[in-house]
Length: 167
Image (tube, rainbow, N blue to C red; front, side, top):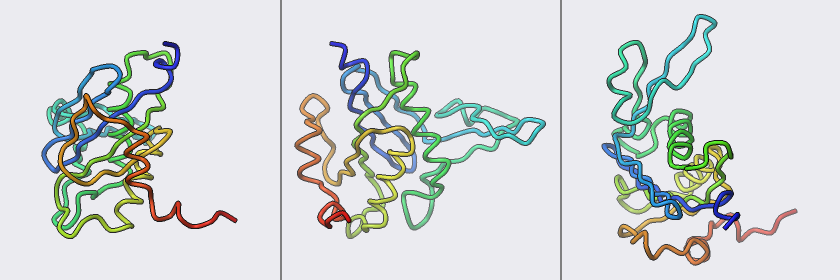
């Protein structure tokens, strides 16, 4: 039971128009536009004002869709990382503990020919930087969240980088 407070699995589907994240162990869902509104205080420090659908309504902020680009699904790494970080925090039911979930990243658009190793690595780094303890970049049909087994997915979608010996 205590393990559930510290570890969970989040399944994240990414598209240009929608970011859907499901905290499998908590049965909570974030399903909104992939937007992040950034404001700057008088000292020039940038802060997240809002995410999702609310971000588009903030008048004194820069609103960014980090997944909108004509060629690729990941357009702004830093904004995407902050957005994912905020989504993870919103999905985490115990606000006094810092979440460290296992994350399954599932880009669902702009996959002609599959993801390049560079894109896979970018998504891995994105999730790790947002606070994930482990990451799987998944390609394929949408997963049934009631049947997700992170360990099995990790074996199936092991990174090519992991095949090289560490010095």
